Image (cartoon, helix red, strand yellow):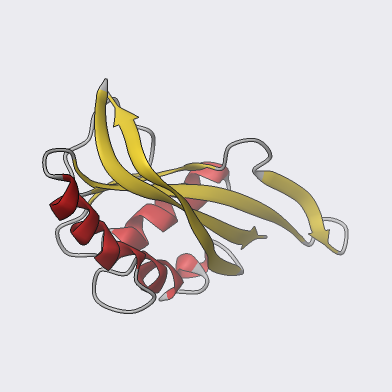
Length: 138
């Protein structure tokens, strides 16, 4: 199976294709929005043996996207572009554009978005949302 860090790095590389988005492959102490942070999902994030013994494992990630902290109306309007199912700033489009993340996984799916609201980094709250992403790793 591809290592957790290799898959996390591959997801971050895909997100880095979104112009203007600062991407972190690990949880940083602080961010400069707009930013995306790739991290393992909270709770269970690794399911072993999802196909034929050691055929593949499923990895669950969260991608936290934050857009700002000053003007809530502007921050939410900016966040909407990342939440869209299509378009140049769509997180879903960017992550699913390369279904095997350069050969790192068998597939990647953006499953859902939640936790729309404030997210803290370095003691500062930013407006954002959390994407749930699943990858099948061999």
